[in-house]
Length: 284
Image (tube, rainbow, N blue to C red; front, side, top):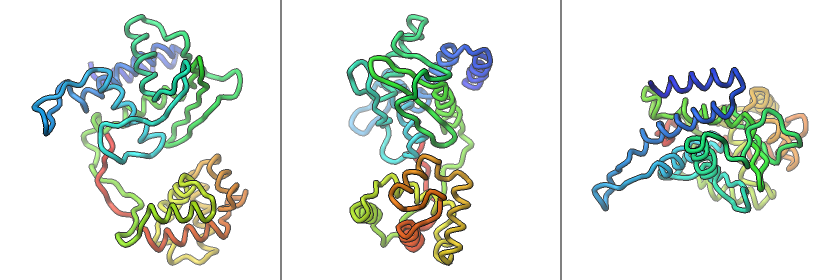
């Protein structure tokens, strides 16, 4: 039986609304995938072999994949954590720690979900947080109890299905918006943030649109043409509705999604100083 077989089981369980059962199988698939990336013994430069326990491999793999999917962040050395901190039982914990200790352990060792964690199809009151990225939408409410939307099951399926360890045929390079060698990207972000009181995350969303349009097209476009290019990017959902609203709140675009002077300035800087380059893929 393979990981693919386990995922077929998940679909059958979801069809019958057996959500805890689907989560149990997904946890098994995550653990199996984690062991492909982090075997029980790993060689390192300072010691012949280093033991990695089940908990470590599970948390590192799940945390890295969540960070890549939800934050589009696959930078930095492995192993790494999600940095998605949730309040649970009076503590701030990485989500992968919660899933391992309170979902994985309870389901596999006790056969039931921890009573303070619940998967729901709908929330009785609006969730405290919602994240939408890469076709995945997850919502949650946390505190003494943790309530997770069914979108978390979609996230965990994506964690497994699209992991490179389960898709060895995938190319090991990708196209990415990259600053030109003579351009200081961190300095640009800091200067713009200070000048207009704009968070780096808003600049990130503008970069998404710039990637979609392509810097070389930005450079040769008139303002009217660039405005149309940007509208096409929005129509393609390159920037989701929540972030469009946040960009409008800082007058980068207006409520109709049209570039404003600050938006034009950002796009022109990106067009002049970035290219779309092919780079190695670091993601698991």
